[in-house]
Image 1 (cartoon, rainbow, N blue to C red):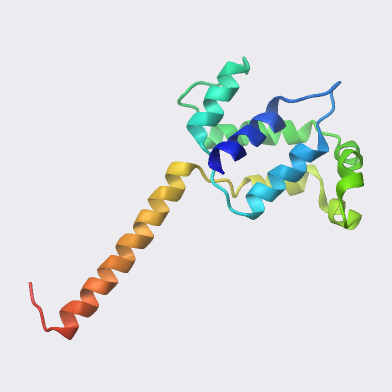
Image 2 (cartoon, rainbow, N blue to C red):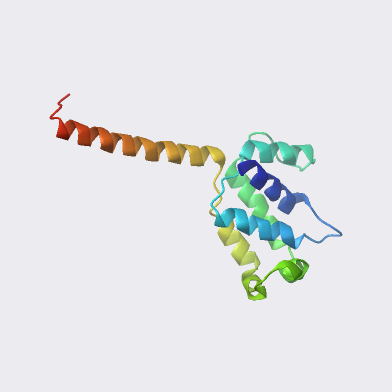
Amino acid sequence: MPSLFAGKIHAVICRAWKNRIKGRDLYDYVFYLSHRTPVNLKHLNARLIDSGYEGVGLDTTLDEIKDILYKRFNAIDFDQAGRDVLPFIHNPASLDIWSKEFFCSITDSISCLTDSLTGMLKENDTADNARDERLREKYAITD
């Protein structure tokens, strides 16, 4: 999923159809973020480079990507994007929150694959340390 999310972020940044964004790209963007999907930053950077997006390199950071997204959200007509996706939405009122502020706010929560893996490893280390401590106490083991 991280590589698919990278592709969706690429679409949000680069895809324009007659200067309009596809509403489905925004809808999918919200989906990935609501599922806390980390982005494969290396894959995203490679796709942006391949598309000729200026100012992006293989070492572009997540914060720089977020800045690009903030700028993109400042240029989007959210009413038009909502109309584009409206026929596919069961609850049209869910689009009422679509705005520059909403998308910039949820963009703050993007993490990248390496951040997520590091977090998972830290959680595992904490759990392992707690387990080791319980075993030391149970069997009166001293270092």
